[in-house]
Length: 266
Image 1 (cartoon, rainbow, N blue to C red):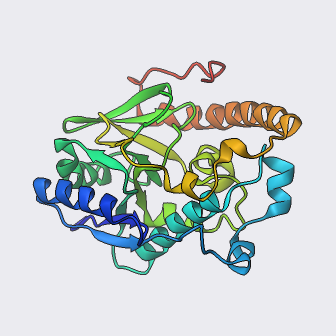
Image 2 (cartoon, rainbow, N blue to C red):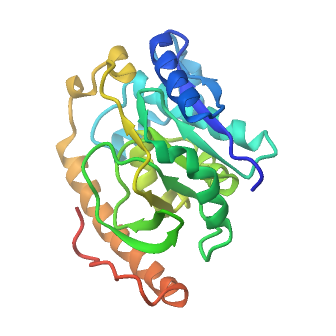
């Protein structure tokens, strides 16, 4: 992989965020390309209906997504399409409320090593775990990093690697009806498997007001408790079956990795 582009999702009205990330990138000696984000404040109903299903959302998710969350998902889709429109084989996708560690500058080399490993056919690799930690297991040492797999991928989409194959799979998720980071957890539905690269090199800065919440606060949206309970059970059993099937494949790649405790969902 000769070059690994960095696509930064940023709203036109969030110049202060762009300035902060630009400063960090310059300190690390990295170039990036800005992807203008979809603004939930001005998005049209027709644009929403083209990619988002209110019906599936009401049946399969525990609250109506806000326009900010829908626009966030659409912005990530825009970045995925940008990758597919290029000649690149993979890209780093970043949101703009982030902090980068010095090791972020070494991701190009780590990605090249992954391409020469048993896990070269990857879809998505998380570079951040900004919220509740999730159990993982080591797959392979990648330089100073560890490639890991999850029982349940962590929430958040502030930083991740995505391959062309992964981008195609995620873009085929039309219409969507969950937030983008939640959809990434339902790997058997999207077809895009999620790995992680530790130590994480990206984190939320938590210094700016959420652009999603600035449109509408999802905590103010009424909840569908029965749907939530039903979907939690659906996720548990389908996730369990998914990993049992993958365990059979892992055996031929590595006998050193610790096995998941399939029932210990977090």
